[in-house]
Length: 388
Image (cartoon, rainbow, N blue to C red; front, side):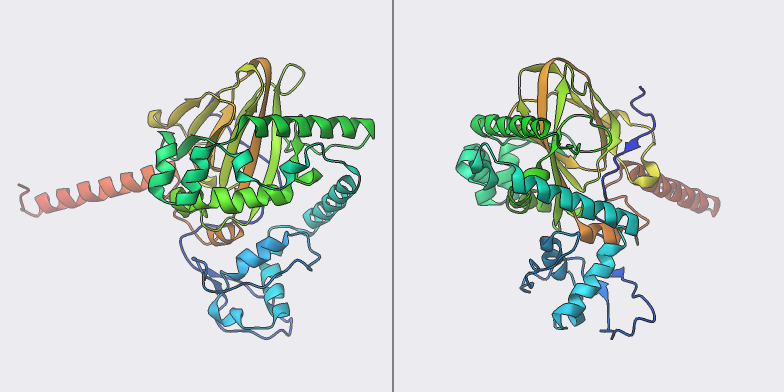
């Protein structure tokens, strides 16, 4: 397979479409009879002084935390309106990302998840609530506690621009999570319950959110990944992450062998190797691309190969093209957390320039600037001027 060939898009349901570079004009459905509240443009930066309402009582296909996060981005005129009006406004935004057929599928998945959690008995209950000292290595805890760019960089390597690696998970946590996944898979087989795979590209693995780990992973994203992504990925919604898709993938004999060249349905991807003993399975990265340039050529400086180390994390933009080479022996299992921002995806629809993060857009912009400078110099010379 050519590394620069067509990229296969993962088909998990998107949380929206958006950029992070400007305000968004949000359309309001006509003829509804509902009142208008002036400017209805989302704020780019959250209103940190505003305390959002709780939405735990809402029965929707969206996680209640998404509404609380999105409320901080509402225009000032919307912050003081009745709660029902805010809910309707936010529902209109979010509903555009899930057509009716997709909403039906999501509702069925929600019911499927509830059936599992009502019957499945966890093996390691301590996994379901984050305890930093037992989950993470001390260097990672200290970096998050200090919460500065310097503290993050002290524990990180950046082998290629926008790709960060660092020690993250304790060996015992990795072993417990591996045990839990194995226990869940045995239970699924025993009760003859259908297991939902992480995406269309992996035939093995499990969605961790499906058997009760969603709250833990949400806390992992909000308290431990968001502080880092705010610093290193602000241009792709790193400061507005509000939902996730958490899963494990399995590679080796009688499992998936490799993973084709693709982009993730995420703004930020966390990938942590859990083990076990294996060889091969290297990740290869080939540059960040917007939708328009997803199949463009790879530049030499964008080439990166990365070998997995159990407990070590790699953090990158979801739009960073990558794949996994064959696991040649043993058994490799990785934890993936796709972090998403509904605000970024909403704003992205109204943007045409992605040169702040798309490598090909940046090259085209630089080329246009080069041609403009050259044309200006030529015109100046032809007019009788001189350049010293």
